[in-house]
Amino acid sequence: MSAPLVLLPGDEVPSDHLPSNNSNPLKLGPGLRLLSQPSSKSANTHSQHVLTATQAGVLTTDAKRNTVSLLSFSNRRYIPTVNDLIIAQIHHSSVDYFHCMVTPHTAHALLGQLSFEGATKKTRPMLRQGDLVYARVLSIGLGAGAEVELTCVNPATGKSEPGGLGPLNGGMVFDVSTGMAARLLRASSSSSEQSESIDGLVVLSELGKKLESLGGFEIAVGRNGKVWVDCSNAGESAIKATIAIGRCLQTVDEKSLGPADQKKFVTRVLREMKLAS
Picture 1 (tube, rainbow, N blue to C red):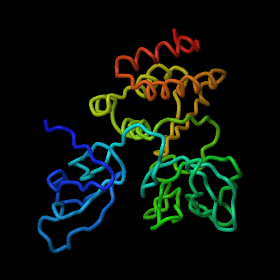
Picture 2 (cartoon, rainbow, N blue to C red; picture 1 turned 90 degrees about the horizontal axis):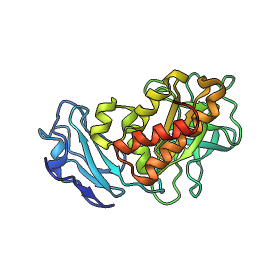
Picture 3 (spheres, rainbow, N blue to C red; picture 1 turned 45 degrees about the vertical axis):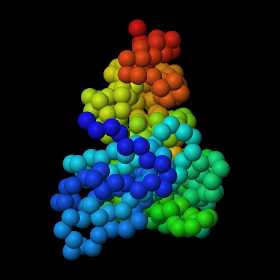
Picture 4 (cartoon, rainbow, N blue to C red; picture 1 turned 90 degrees about the vertical axis):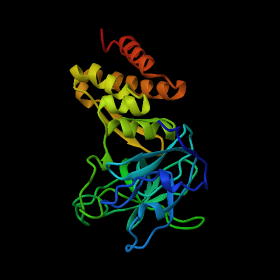
């Protein structure tokens, strides 16, 4: 197995590290920017893509999905990238937009008041200051001060894809590093065996097994370092279960726990909270 390729902001992605699946268009994940692409007449299209890194991280590829992305290191700074899933907080609204906070120290992002599944002027959600939404970055604009635009639907279908886009009701939000958020997103979209082999992250699957008897939990992960957790099905134990999950995720992130230590810590926390024997 070849050594992982680490890129710094501005580094160009070597063409021999790009997927060679010519049957599907090349898809870019977080952390990369397309500078130029080959013409449609070119036979070997992927080798002529010119990509650069927008942040430091390890280059990862998926040959089946024909995707390439950058797995960022743990940090607190978030740089919006088109198609990122994020958790935003409503700051205020205007005639056509909700103005949302994505990070504490950046300009507000714009979310159209009709950018929700089935929304019309009469049925649009009535969001107030402090409400949370699970959204996708639609565009980031160009140049300094460019506005970031969000959406809660797939522009091609008008549906809230993937499931869960839209207002987040109830639950609690916990802060993690952007690197941890990326790992959680990968883990939540893969089986427990795949996520463990790729990122060594088993905390979600372990919590799912141990809290299944309480009704399980819902989770939404934002690439901006926000994790929303809802355990409303746990009845009287809902608050304790929610806090336990948040504590586990933050500790795994801060202490960089391995798979074995993650399982031990989950067991310990749930026993301390009297959620497991």
